[in-house]
Length: 132
Image (cartoon, rainbow, N blue to C red; front, side, top):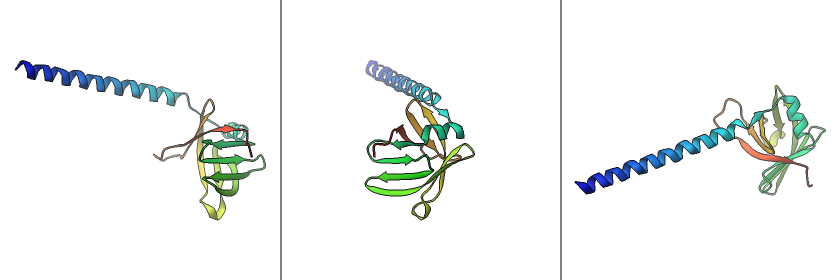
């Protein structure tokens, strides 16, 4: 019986440890989310015009001030247009891909493009001066 109580106590301790880690992890994620700010259309234009949105490894999109959009993803290049509609960043690659609009959220240099009314994960990257 002593052994069973010892094991039972260890299970409770382990369960408490897992719960504590989960609570701390949730708090950290929640805090990180709070730092992201949704941008207005004016703020989006000011941040994106003349800049490249990229993960710096796999893909990059250059948002030219003229409204032209140049993209390169894993060696594949595309050209399209971008504009602001109803406080959203909208991209259009013509027949190459469908038109998409995103809410833009920023925290420091980190940027998230979120699809409104969707449970899809955001596209994450950051803005930098184009190198090309």
